[in-house]
Image (cartoon, rainbow, N blue to C red; front, side):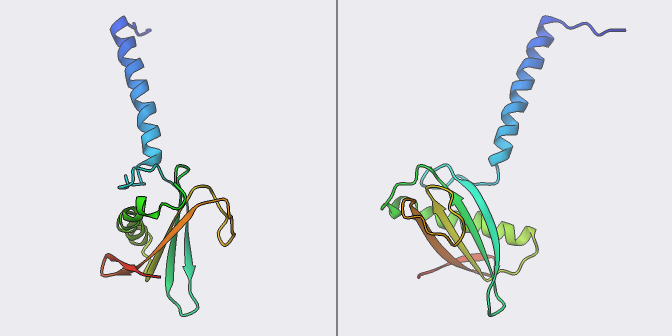
Length: 138
C-alpha cells in the first residue's frame, strides 16, 4: 500500500526539512555564547595545560576573522563572558579542577606557541575560584 502525498503535505515536508537544516547549522555553534562585541567566534581549541607546580590551566582559543587590530577595547568584555560561560562549563563537564583560564581571541588560526606578526591576538587570564572567574591582570 503506497501513501498518498498531497500538495499541503509536500509543503509541510519541505518546510520541516528547511527547519531541520537550519537547526543543524545552529546546533554547530550553540556552545559559543553571543559576546558583547558582536563578533562571530569559532572555538579553535581547548588545551588542558598542566603547570610545573601541579596546577591545571585551561586555554580556550577562539578565532574571529573580523577582529580589529589595535582595538582591544572592542572585545574587552567578551573575555569575562567566555570565561564564565565556556571555561567554567568546560571544567565542570570534564570534572577538572582548573586554577586558571587563559582565553585568547585571534583574527586567524595560529598554532599554539607560534608567533604570527600579521595576526591580531588578544589574551586575558582568569583565576577560577568557587565557580567564578576572577580577572588576573598581567
